[in-house]
Length: 124
Image 1 (cartoon, rainbow, N blue to C red):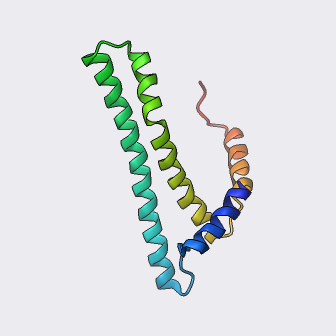
Image 2: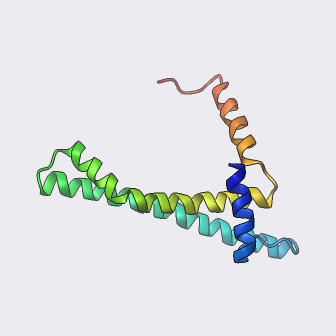
Image 3: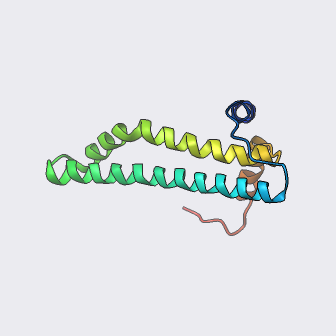
């Protein structure tokens, strides 16, 4: 994760895509703009999953394919696009972490340990 954060820090500078840090108003506008872009990317992930479900339905119902096989086929068709959209999401999340000097790797493992130790966690 640290490699990704370093890469994206340099990439964002190179592309002039950094969150503004000039003053409060510009920072606020830049953060909100980037948040809007992140939510757009998250919705694009949802659209890809919707396409998978629609493709599965079409293959299973309209073409008589076994539903599990249809689902696997539909996932393979959309796998690359979902990867791209998830990567866009990661880029925006990392941009926020970099802006706030958050070590995402450390933060991630701390959060997972916190979840693991919860008393009221769901059991399966």
